[in-house]
Amino acid sequence: MTRLVVAGATGKMGGAIIRESLNATADIEIVGALASRGGRSEGKDAGQKAGIKALGIPVSSDVSGTMFDVMVDFSRPEALEKNLAVCVQQGSAILIGTTGLSAAQNRLISEAAESIPILFAANTSVGVNLCAALVEMAARVLGQITDVEIVEAHHRHKVDAPSGTALLLGEAAATGMEVDFPNCGVFSREGHTGERVQGTIGFSTIRGGNIAGEHTVMFIGENERIEITHRATDRKIFAEGAIRGAVWLSEQEKGLFSMQDVLDLR
Image (cartoon, rainbow, N blue to C red; front, side):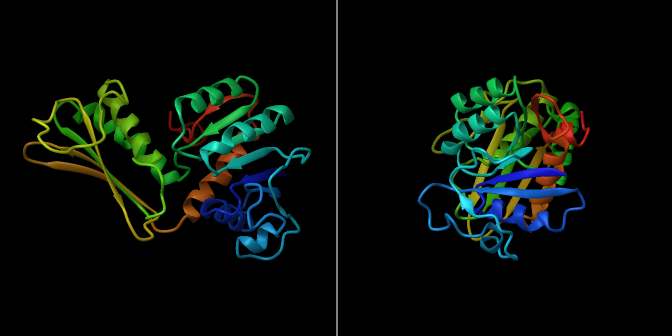
């Protein structure tokens, strides 16, 4: 049995993970649900907030003292430090799906990974991580003879850009091209920009409606264009991948891992 605490339990991803936990083939149990202190959901049943049956687990702002194996964190960057501290104190693993982190927060993750297992996943979809492996392969062959552009689209409520998944794909392309990321990234274009510089990776962002997530990596040559695209139509795929990753993570001792490790793609 893998015991999970869901951080960001009242958010879109948190709710999807709680719902999917009832259908998972893995032997898992939700034992805690974290949300910000003073929120309207605090004290309410986590299952009912996720749109399923009551689980007998109240939404709480503190899970200190709760015995769990893995915290699955899809909350907000400002909650990361506290969540890491709880996991380090209890010797529990943490899967971090929160994006838009600062350099200081990334350092905290690296430091915590010296004592607990951490899975840092910009995207937990199996399909997206397979796409990242394909992008790296394509960039190794095509990166020096084509222009590489990444276009991503998400719902109107997403607060960071480019998305963590777009950055994941950009890093995969940069690895294949043997260029330094994110220094090779072009994240905005406006006005007189001059000609495109060879070896750069361009990013374009779309925000609107309820788009769950769409990403396309384009390798644009003189007479052909190769595209690798992933389109998500339901957050269920991310929840499924997160649960798969959490179960895998519960079997590790310590260290910093990615979904590429979970899926044995490297």
